[in-house]
Amino acid sequence: MKVAIIGAGVMGTGVAHNLAQYGISTIVVDNNATQLDNCRKAIKANLRLYHFHPHHKKDTANVEEVMSNIHFTTSLAEIAQCDVVIENITEDVALKTKLYSEMNQICGKDTVFGVNTSAISITAISKLMQQPENVVGVHFMNPVPLMHTVELIRGVHTSERALDTFHQLFALVNKTGIVVNDSPGFVTNRAMMIFVNEAIFMVQENVAKAEDIDTLFKTCFGHKMGPLQTADLIGLDTILKSLEVLYESFNDDKYRPCFLLKKMVDAGYLGAKSGQGFYSYQQSYLL
Ligand SMILES: NC(=O)c1ccc[n+]([C@@H]2O[C@H](COP(=O)([O-])OP(=O)(O)OC[C@H]3O[C@@H](n4cnc5c(N)ncnc54)[C@H](O)[C@@H]3O)[C@@H](O)[C@H]2O)c1
Image (tube, rainbow, N blue to C red; front, top):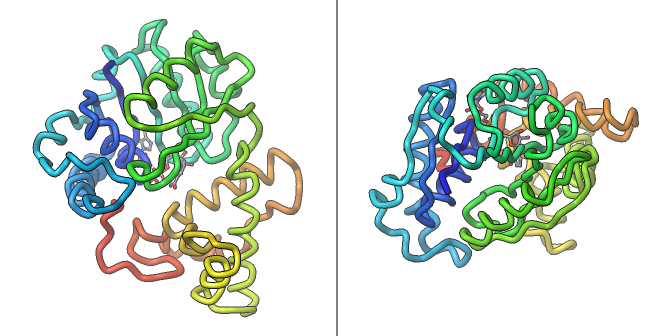
């Protein structure tokens, strides 16, 4: 199975790392050459960093061997021979719409497309394609090489063949897909975006410091990470875009993005990937 990974940001980097460490041949495409370079460096660093983590595949110490499974390119045309495409570009409906229209011209009629999105409609994306039945939502969890469950989203047109293709791919990389029906934010982000946004409101209103909010979530609810650490890990721009999609899709005020979140994104404070969010990051291994 040959897999194309489009978008070399936080998620594309994790997906490429994960597939390559299980010996799957991948092509990573990004329209920004600097991002591709950062992605290459981040995978190398993360292979070493995650080495002792209990959830990381153990026999991947040979970094060069893993890297030889990945081909990096800025040319979308190179994905023509791939059986599966996993798209992880910016959470932006207009950008994704343009990309899928381009992929329609490049890929064959049997190619299966996985849309990695936080909240965008899988059904709407599938309608951009000549074969809408080949489109599935694949909501990977971050960091991808350490997380073993993927939310698989069945759009209105999604076929069993397309879902099976991802079940088979996940079996190769020690992951399980849980199938849910298409709805904004699916199961995980529909709930998670509310408590992340509410935590940001609490920082804005000076109810508590970010550290204390996160500590309360970890020690009282048993979460591994607090909501503000999670927001930094995901990327504050991605959180903002997701809340905007949820707000618009449900037409419900409970998803209105907090002003502090907008202000931080405007300032370029995007979380771990930019070095500054609710916390500071000396060196980001995520990207
Ligand atoms: N960050 C998370 O924790 C997380 C978790 C699950 C799902 N997602 C979803 O995954 C997707 C990617 O998120 P991310 O956090 O990796 O974003 P990101 O901002 O870190 O990276 C996006 C990448 O896409 C590239 N890109 C944009 N347009 C492109 C195009 N037309 N062709 C090729 N490359 C293009 C950008 O250059 C960038 O490298 C989003 O839809 C997001 O909602 C993110």
